[in-house]
Length: 94
Image 1: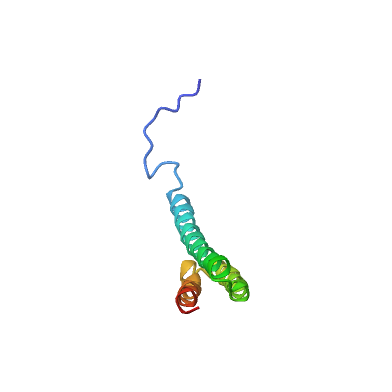
Image 2: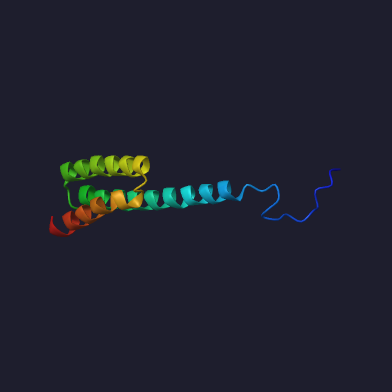
């Protein structure tokens, strides 16, 4: 058996910078997914409960575009936040 019971330290063979970068990417992706799911729930409210399928379709296109833009530019969930606000207002007004 391999003798790998030594104590791991941050200055050893660990690539701590890569672990931190991976964690930051995971947190950013999680935030974007949560904001996108909130948009989809609001679109389902618009379409299913209020009968505004066209508005929901436009909202879905805006959500997809904002999520793609946020993922490519690093804006993450902040790119989807205006769409959440617009869909929330549409749910209230319509």
